[in-house]
Length: 223
Ligand SMILES: [Zn+2]
Image (cartoon, rainbow, N blue to C red; front, side):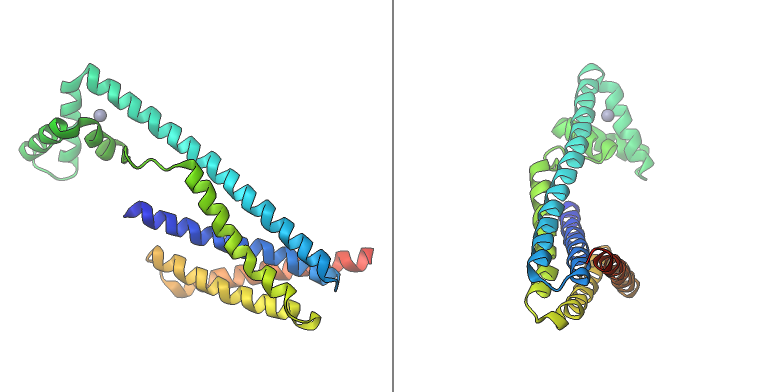
């Protein structure tokens, strides 16, 4: 349940990243040249680089997290084997801290220990579901996919329309898309949506203004 929500949120953030960074690239290049090929080439290169870098970053961070979780589970397993009595008392204490009466906490701890001691300790003590460790390959692939989907939007918006409409149309498409991703991520996080939308749209607009300005300066300097 909770992990599904995290996946959705990661997907929206990845798409948001793809939209902003690719839009920045194509708008920046479009400020320097009217030729379609360099805009398209830069946009596709940016999409590929961004997707690979997202996948790599996600793979590394999720792998590290999974290694940590596995090490913690291993430690817990050893403690349960070496000193089951102390572990039982520890579990009862944790339930007591959560608000159960001492007697109830002892009963709960004993029953859960008989059922699946490692799972009980993993969940209460470490906050880990031992069967639900995130797969780094899944995380890498899905963030690359989310980034690519987001990146396709400004890429298509900049190459399809006639020259004079390229930049304004791309900016409009991007700002609308950022309003939507801002809304969705606010909804997923149960945060107020209006401020999330404003932050996301203003931030994206600023990013486009900066890359357009830099592209224009570079275009004038080398053109
Ligand atoms: Zn324990």
